[in-house]
Image (cartoon, rainbow, N blue to C red; front, side, top):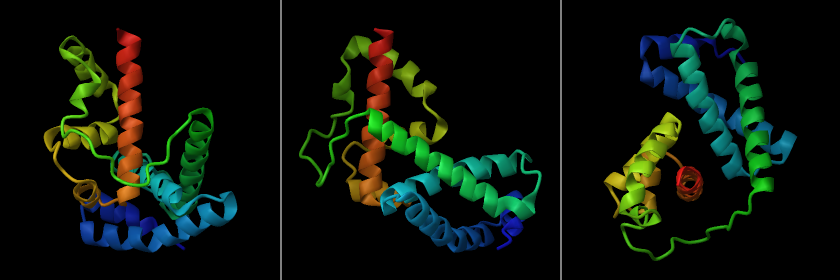
Length: 179
């Protein structure tokens, strides 16, 4: 299929057309990742979301040279995103969170003491924009439920917990490396 219209709709700021084209492309890409690489539906969703973030920036920056080949580029980007995620999972031990744990609303700030808060601010700036926006939402609304966060970012509840876990781990490693 030809998704060159996605380039036009993004450049023109036509959110309705962009959403429609993304909605059409997403199931195709998801099936590709699940069938070709054995991705779980949630991992496929994560890889697709990262791809859209990347593609939109490339389109807005006029870096897409062949709009007619956009679907192939999207598939390739998703493939790389998924394989990178898979590699990261195999090198790290992740606990599977099956339900929302009971914790203090300020659990994120409990990661560091007062002296480390300055380091945390530096580490926050080092995060890529999507992660920074995601974790900033949690800091701004510490009592927000996972469902609220998932709805705000238009992702699944499981995806919201996985992202939170990843961002917290990135921040923790960054803070530890700067102490």
